Length: 392
Image 1: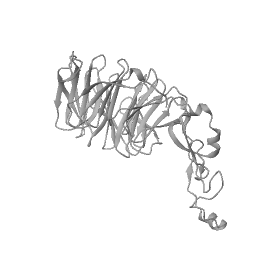
Image 2: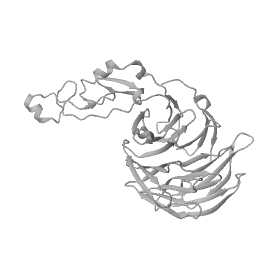
Image 3: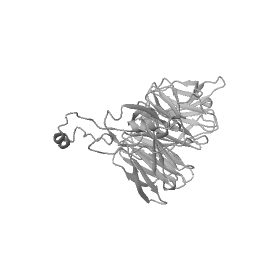
Image 4: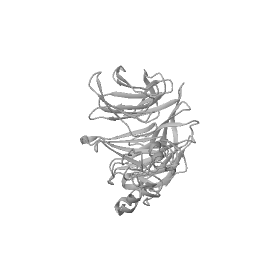
C-alpha cells in the first residue's frame, strides 16, 4: 500500500429513517438527491451556513430503490416494480410527476437515462432488463436473465448494455435502433452477486464489484478480452466510483474501507487455476487420487492448493509462503509456491493502491470530479460528504 492523503469529512446529512439506496450529486449545484427505503425522495441544498437541508421531501407509497437523473429529469424505481418520472425545477424547490412506467413485477434495482436517444433503461429483481422511449413511455424491448438483475451500465456510443445479476454473471447486450437487440455474451469471473458496474467509454473497459469481495477490470475494447482481478477488501464490495480524468477507482466495502486503485498502473491478468491429481511441484498425489495412494502405499494425504502467481496446483508443503502480488491485483498476502516466492521481482511487489478507513458501512456512492466531492450513503441511514482532493 502507498500512503496518500485521507478523505476529509465535510458534512453529514441526517433525515432518512431507513437504508439509503442511491445518492446523486447535482452537477453545477451545491445540492444532491437521495432515495431510501423510508419511501422518500429528498433534494438537499447547501445553505449559507454550509449545512445541507432538504428543499424537497416527497413521500411515496412504496420504498424507493433506484434513481437516475439528467437535465433535471428524475427517474425513481420503486419496490413495486414501477418507475416514476419527475421534473425538478431549476431552483430545486419543486417536483412534478410526469409519467409512471409500469415496468417490472418486482423491485427496480437500477436505472440509466440516456438523454441523447431519450432512452430509459431499467433492471429488476424479476430477472428482466427493459428499455423505453422517453417520448411516449413505450417499451422498446426486453431481455430476460437467469437470475435477479441488480445493476446496469451502458455505452452510449455503441449501445452496449451490461447487466449484472445475482449469480455473478454480467450479460452483454447490444441495443439496435427500434425494438431489436442482440445478445453478445456473458462475462463470467465473479463468484458472488454483482453489486455495481461502471463503463469507461474512452478506455473501453468495464469495472465491476461483487459480494465475493473482488473487483474486475474487463478489457472489452480492441478485442482484448482480458479480465484483471483486484483484491483488497475483506468483506463484500458494495459500490464503486470512478474518476476518469486521473483513472482512479474508488471501492467501498462492508469492511468499512475505501480503497483507491490507480488504474494507470500496469497489471497482469490473474493466473487461471490448473487442475491436477498430483502436486505439480513434488508430484505427490492429492488425497482423492486413491489409486496412486494405494499403489504407492502412501498415507501422507495432501490437500490441493493453488499458487496465485502461476496458477499451478500444489500441496501445502510446496507452497508454505505468502506474499502480496499487486501486479496481479492482490494487495494482501496470498499463497505462492516455492519457485514463485523465490523468483518474484521487485516491480511485482510495488503497490500503487491507497486504503482508508471510513468507519461506516457504505450502501451507495457518487463522485463529482469538479468539486472533488464524494457522497456516501451508509447503513446508519446518514449521508456523508467527503472532500477527496488530497487523495487524487
